[in-house]
Length: 142
Image (cartoon, rainbow, N blue to C red; front, side, top):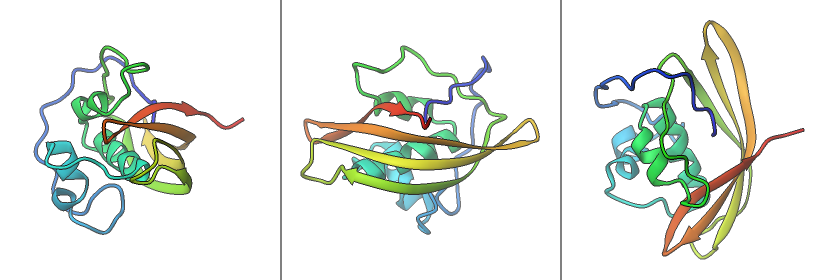
């Protein structure tokens, strides 16, 4: 997801508890939380996509930057705490498995912002280097 928002200082945040925002059905700490903490690396492009979506939900800009490919990574990232990410739908995946070096994940991320509902749709491209997946860029529909 490429939604970096207006210049708001990142709030101090309490640890996220409950079901994982990626909608896996697992507890956050056992799902995307382990990637955010650095306890494990996402084994597939789809899992990295899910963990990056969850990082947007919990306002973890450090994780987003850490998993962004060096060739396309911005120098900083400010997240909008008013953006409420509601649901992630994975539309399709291509490659991106544990033995691949590239992959794509098409998704729809549903949100609310300033009382308005919306959907961000894109196809994200990922590269695997040194056994780690990185977000490269996005292709927007249209």
